[in-house]
Figure (cartoon, rainbow, N blue to C red):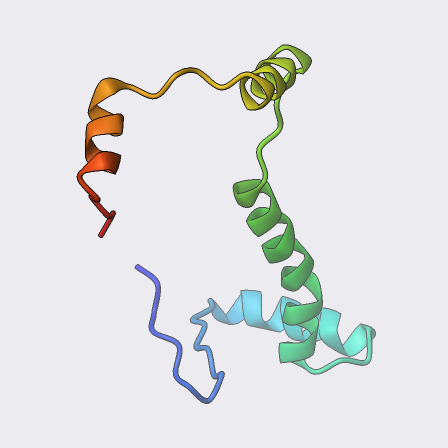
Length: 91
């Protein structure tokens, strides 16, 4: 389960001692502190994961279908027309 992140920006990470040693050694080789080393490695991955989750790739067939529906939308359902006439607003 993810831990809460405080407003200070501090994040806690529990590591096995040998994993911390490995990360610390790699950070030293790159002349970075451990936090900078981890951020440098993980921020691009986090941004890629967010982009993947927020973007939708359509096939050519699906893209053409969406464009056709935008150009020639279907008639609204009778229930939708009644709701609009009644002044119904979404919450």
